Image: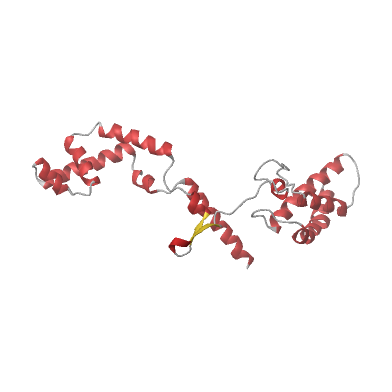
Length: 225
């Protein structure tokens, strides 16, 4: 694109887009006017470059008009699919519909009108099954390296018992079992990694992504006001 075409885009076309799009274009999903103006600007730049390449002359009003029509029909600078379920054109055609995970899914009258949101119905807080299976394999390999006392320390602690209970069961002093417990802790960290406690407490990746998306939308809403 030539410097002259760039000046026309910036000074003649973009102002028209900023004026018309908020009033004439329907938003899809989380789109807002600023995003649509950016999309329309990219579309207009491509049109301007194309007509300049073939040597045609068009007015800034024509470029702005057709860019707006593209955006109104669901076309975006990233594509114009009408079969992709996430595409704007598909949603404008009524073929698909996106719902926020924060929208109410049902109301339980038996519990005093408790409202269940979509993310409550669809969410699952457990880790990915592949991660769980991999950790179990690692755990089995670790247990194979432990002696009876070390295995007993793990079993008793999982049952909510104390090191003293293990000491009584094996008829040894509590200090001896405490040393055994510390050896087990060192072996677990060496075998499974120093960050194993962080990994088992970390939220599933999709949950982090959902929280991040909510925070981003909240910040965008606050900026408007």
